[in-house]
Amino acid sequence: MPPTYGMYAVSADINAVENVKVPLKYDFQIDLATLKETWNENSKILFVCSPNNPSGNLLDRKTIQTILDEFPGMVVVDEAYIDFSSEESWTDKLAEYPNLIVLQTLSKAWGMAGIRVGVAMADPYVIEMLDKIKPPYNISLPNQQLATEALSNEAKKNAYVEELLEERTKLITALGQLPNVRKIVPSDANFLLVAFEGAKEVFNYLIEETLIVRDRSSQLHCTDCLRITIGTKEENLELMNLLKAYLEKSVSKL
Ligand SMILES: *Cc1c(COP(=O)(O)O)cnc(C)c1O
Image 1 (tube, protein in one colour):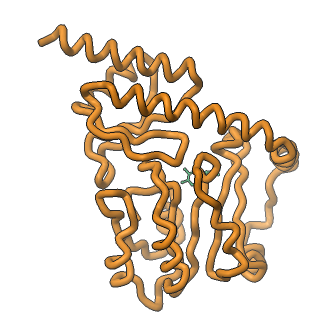
Image 2 (cartoon, rainbow, N blue to C red):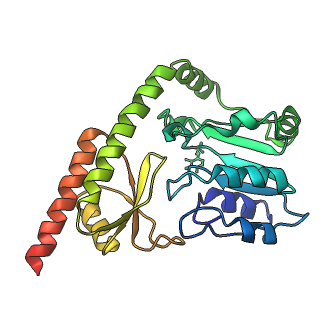
Image 3 (tube, rainbow, N blue to C red):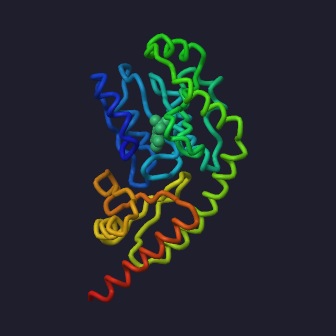
């Protein structure tokens, strides 16, 4: 349901699986009516990314519940950003919904993107099926060790998350005061989708100053949007200083 994480379509394409797109609405929520008109008894998997990448918002819980009740195939809820959210994970509902698969990863809140380890949680029958079709090569031993080590120290992750959430609040306030910021999408993730006046120029200026944000302006409903990852306190201050310097530079040009 675009705009969303690109890998679902990539994986479908690699496996020569037909890929049907039902765009999110302008508020980045699921268009349930169109979705229901679009799915049929041949629909195999529906990917629901919540909090959604690149918009950062949570998808409405009731809508996901309806999908779990009515969608004819498997429903994958991608919770890569769940640690940054105030809402409960869908893992609590696994016993209730044998058609539910929940994905989580060590790549975000746990800060372990380098080991590329994530998990799929589902009904034992589903896991048994996945075990049958997965490649025989397991996650390498060093990566298993690093993953279990990280998982045994949840307090460290929680401390990362706490700091990030404080910084997210501060950054929303600071960005909101810039005259060229048109919109900040409510975020339950570790990034903000921000609509700027003249986003391309802002993006290019930041690149020149060696600060990299994501230009998402070519994605659906994301015109003039940059996706800004919440950094450390120092990184966020640097970002704000650069954005203010950019404004002063553009004013002096007039
Ligand atoms: C980062 C991300 C993932 C997971 O990436 P891995 O590093 O492969 O675990 C999954 N879904 C979304 C939406 C992401 O942003």
